[in-house]
Length: 177
Ligand SMILES: [Mg+2]
Ligand SMILES: [Zn+2]
Figure 1 (cartoon, helix red, strand yellow):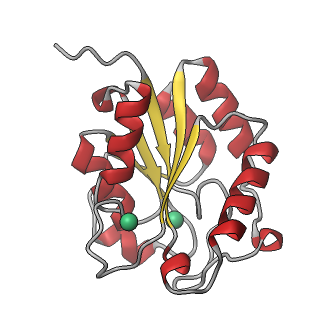
Figure 2 (cartoon, rainbow, N blue to C red):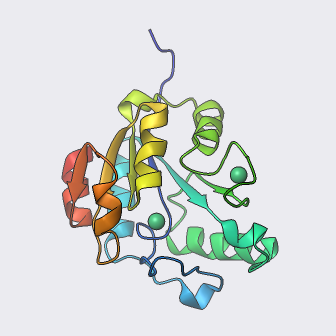
């Protein structure tokens, strides 16, 4: 029997916490960060129900030299403040595809850190994302997967088999209930 005590929401950042950008575009400045309408309500509601809340994000902009690490940290500090301290931790992969790291989604490295540091039971947890990589990352740790649709990710959805497909954050709130 698992000794892990907490359940969690693993949340992708771009497309879940803030609005999705068109494929191939990267958020590199705070003024490009448009918080998703309804996300704070979802996080506060999940928190009340006992979920730990983690952002799990690939940030290849760092490896590609498009953004400084200090800038990423500043964006994440402001994001956590905007979300009223609901996030337990923000984990990011600074590498790019082909670097061979263990943390870039769909690899489970970032989530394995959260599981260890916060004593999480993946089987009681959800991965909420908007891409094929997110769904495969969730599957890799044995979490249930939730795909949030937007105007950019219809092709992504064809590549994966999420446990749940939602059009709104309100639908996600019902699923995790
Ligand atoms: Mg995304
Ligand atoms: Zn990495």
